[in-house]
Length: 102
Image (cartoon, rainbow, N blue to C red; front, side):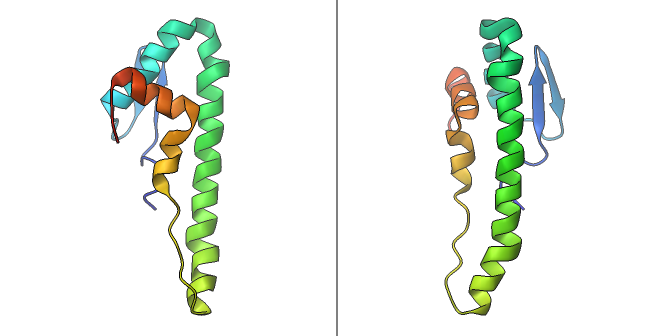
């Protein structure tokens, strides 16, 4: 699909879990957890997980339902702007902490 970093990675405290982990980005989440402590779960982890689910569903619908219908009727099918995933505050903040640029 190519929309969200695949496979997903997850950082809780100093533990990074997942497949192909972008360690710079995940280190940003680690720094967030150090600053926020127990609030990390509510301020970063849960919103980030919900955002990833939303973005994945939105991308699936666009790629598999909307774009094929547009192509069938001769209209241009624009891809989802995948960079917008990293504009969400949890992800952009992690990138800033890690001094990481996509």
